[in-house]
Length: 401
Image (cartoon, rainbow, N blue to C red; front, side, top):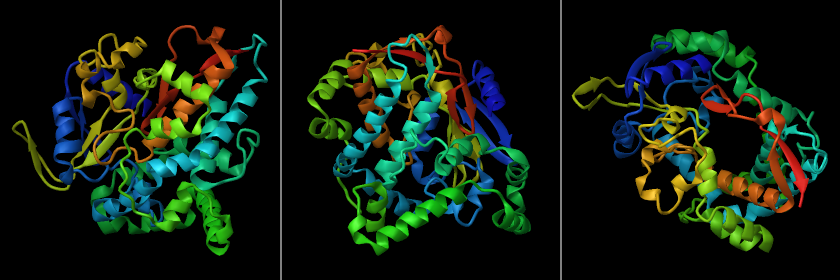
């Protein structure tokens, strides 16, 4: 994927649209914002499915039933159910879990505070993210920040680097047109393949059975919401502000408002992130006189969109003011996709924003942060699967306030 993104970046210096094959699957790499809006939003009914990028997962009898892979009516039903776990009221209930994990993170940073020692926070951020997901989403009692050898955590760290790699992936991706002839191959993978999901499946199954057999263990988390299958229609607008306003300490709220009254700092940071998203056409379609067949996949290269000078002034400069209320009208909406766009955007984006804002607020309330010597200059971004991540760092120093 690193090579893929490099080629894409060079190609887009010359064109807004390029055709290529991902295995035997026809793809369009698109930076034409009107085209992306057509596929992801205006004509979404023809592009409800994600593109074919992880064929081995999509064809697996269990993994293929995940919300990220299902399509059509099955996706609509599942999306509706999962969305019910991220309503305003449900996120408010998760705030105590988020606060608990954040406090552990602050305590861990105290080991380095005032020592003049720089620390690479990538590992700590990974553990914190797992705690947020584990406690707020699934009610897992384990603290991954303190138990770094936990099998759940070590397995999770291997997942993304291993996605879309290896001989099985290449074979599956290059034989999508062979139909039933590939059934023995996928059966073999299902029986003998080394799939990391098995660890998560085993642990999650234990929690589900325990919740079902012991109602007194109910917790206000996403797992319980899905078990209850409550379909709600509450609006998600201003979820972060509402939940913080009622759940966080006065000092935290003040810092949040002072730092980012409209999330300008967070958005300016997210502009440096991104990987790619994709959709697949169910039927033939036409765009600007060009005709494309059903099955064609469209890829939105988020990282390149976020760094394109056609849409952003000085895109390599960290500039929160570009997201200020005064400049909001000048932003190309389709050029900013930190959580995707359209009906199939990231279902948990509000929870992610809540976690980001809470962590930032607690961090600046307790510490002064400076760049370490190893972090001078630009932080280079790498990539695996379809996401981007820092190649090394961030390296930071902390001082108690």
